[in-house]
Length: 175
Image (cartoon, rainbow, N blue to C red; front, side, top):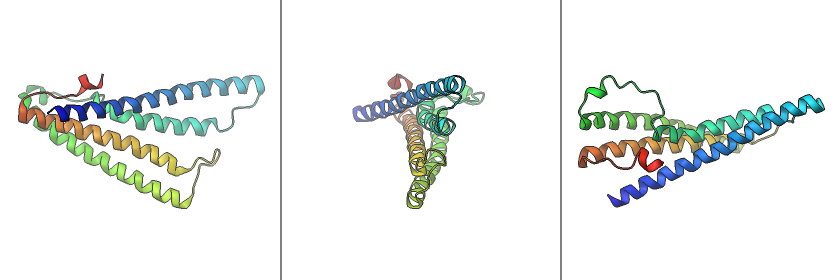
């Protein structure tokens, strides 16, 4: 159980690190937007590649926030049926739904890793700044991989609760 809690804590730290990276990227996006507006107004010339850079930074921000969103139960959830259930039955439903969601995210992760190989081999890049597409696909793959791991971790917590009747890690471990 101690090893499980250590692994749980490690993953929560990884998810927090991804969110921190996303926060830095978000701040960069805001600064770049302001600088671009000032450059347009004062110098009559925008910052080259701003739209493309902000678009791809937005992808990174979203991808890196997915795992923490899952960890913190940030999605809108309908609990009408599950609120009436006993805790172990509710955890059983948690196992099923988290595993199904992890499979779905895992398929997306697999697809992005395939795209990394394809776009790396082709050498394709963005039109303005010539950012290699494989880098963008790799960022997305990492984000979805982290989200897949977060869902698997939530499912394992539900299994541990059913088996031991004890809550492990979770939102408390992520804070």
